[in-house]
Image 1 (tube, chains in turn brown, blue):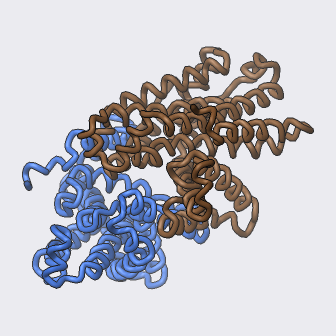
Image 2 (cartoon, one colour):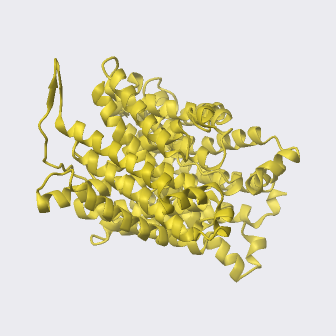
Image 3 (spheres, one colour):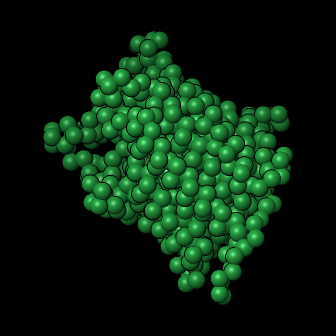
Length: 321
Length: 279
């Protein structure tokens, strides 16, 4: 049972801590810090479902986040929906989009798929830049009464923070649930040897399309929440290729294929990045450092921090997964 | 439309580098775009230093590209050859981030241009700018030189042998490490050269490489991965497409069409649209 897994409880404690820390003393600056960490963890965890579990590199993962943001914001501003419903519907819509797309492009394997995901990202971005209802390249803004409906901006911002933390916890639990399920075993089989998996009766195309669509859901919800919180959205911030790639760095850093690794990598990288950005001398070299880090990890520690920990203290393998 | 043809030759040249590396070592070189951008800046630096005909300066750019290629190969690529594709994708991407990061720190992201132009040519009602003509001629000349090299010299034949079957080539006494280094260096040099050519046509920033990298992917996929000469033809086709489509729809839709086409071709013809003709 999933309840017996230490990581399950660890996740809950972690989420509770993320909520408790800024709430005590009403520390808004800390909250703004932590929300970025949570977003990083959401992106890295869901990317892990593709890269870590299934062995397919998705360079365009951010497309789900951005599309979720667009659908969510559209529903909130133009259709005057409640935020929570808008976010859920955004998630579902983007998941279906991913499923349909996945059934097509997941016939490709390995590097061909990776290239196609870049193509998808750029095609979607370019489409949104020309799409009138979504404000073309200037994007969309939230009018203030969208916040009023949730009891004023102050209240609404705290609410979105709690929701984002909730989505973060769900992401980690989802990773755990998939990892311990038969479905997860099928994905691992695809990662290790796709041809053998086919022979053993794994419906690989279906499995891949489903996991592609599942990995789209929570990032899309998070996107809807985040862009609601920011109050605006435009194509270049919604489909930021760099963020998509940083997600990969986070995942590799923490350790691909593990629940804790994805979360740890996401959290640490986000912290590292914000401290680099705020150090005047280093702010220009943020990319260089991230790139160097990625190169070192790929060459010398392909299993990331958690993989290194496993080898150092083999007992941790039982507890952290 | 003719303009499209000529720019297409430059796209093709850029894609040839990507395609060569892919074909020989099964590595998708994600440093490609960054190297194209470096080629632009190399041209800019050489041109401001010597102020002679920009197309003569292609030679030092090519040479610098070769050196850079060897460096990148030993830094990031050699160790991941034979490991999963994920490793090489990520390691080349890491180098890409570092190049872009350093480039941004030095040149920021503001636009530069190489202020050089050749006299144009007027044919009837049409005028062709000299730079477009020269750039496309240079692209075709470099492509032909590569063809001569691959098919008529010993190192070139060795590259093709390793691409065909690495073990068999090793047994014939070819050092595959040397050959892979060489092929990678040539691929990088081609990317740098195409960047240098682009820099004589349009203004550029350190981030411009990414767009050309995507076009290179589109072209390479159209041609079939690992087919350098198909790449030149496909590049011209892409340029032609841009030229033909522009009068009818807004320019901002072009990326959508290109990348949509890219995904569709990738799914429908994973071996490239010329697969049947060359198989």
